[in-house]
Image 1: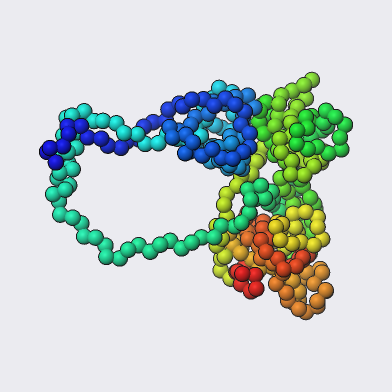
Image 2 (image 1 turned 90 degrees about the vertical axis):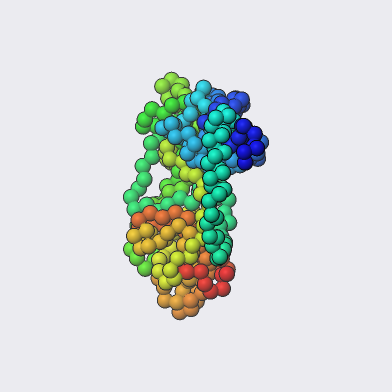
Length: 362
């Protein structure tokens, strides 16, 4: 140890620093990833930039925008970033630096003392490998459209009044005029939500409420003649004048499958859309939530017939048929949103949902 060089290299974390600014308007595309920026990346915001765009460019999907917000908590409004500020996209990696000779000698003495100390007894038993966790097979774009069931009619902050060109419905790229109840800065993104209802549940419980889900995004561009003007940045389907504007924009979080204790029963209130028949790769709303013990990731078997109150179970009176399997992706106190990942046949609203993955759907 004494023959070691006078200078000892150690690892230390350096504070964040500014890399070369990226000024181009960020568009959705393949993720560049941290490997493309070994020295880290800090983005200098240009006009029109949003965390939604930067997430699409660097993280592979716009719906991971909270990852960038987490690194930049000085932002009070994650849906509005203004030109000139710096956004950390990828933090710089750990760097090496050299201690002065005196400090190195002290470090060497400490290392020597540690080397002379008797080794701690090693544990004979190796730690067990963590069990594999299955992640729900759903795209970020599907996930953000899950929506929710609400007891009261939701109220947004406004609506799309019209487009520059005469149109009944609006889609991506359309320049639109907005009626909003508050001042919205130029550059901010707004969610566009569709509300369906009132919906009366065809199930074993008396439930009436409203389905609300995302149909698009609008970016405010400024004002003309005192009226807010925007551009439709994303449309999952044609937008209408009845759709609500909101400052809430959902994000994608992978859903870990956790079946939950078997036996808890709920009923399907409705599907996301107005379809009479429901099937795989759609969302359904259940009439039970966290108050009943339901959690995100729980698995429910969907069962039609057998004396349940399903309105269409008369197709086979008295016979229970497992028609699908759904995974909970969103929970409120009273209701849950579940993604139907498998189905053997179409089924109506009102079928029974029983917690616990079993039966013939595995």
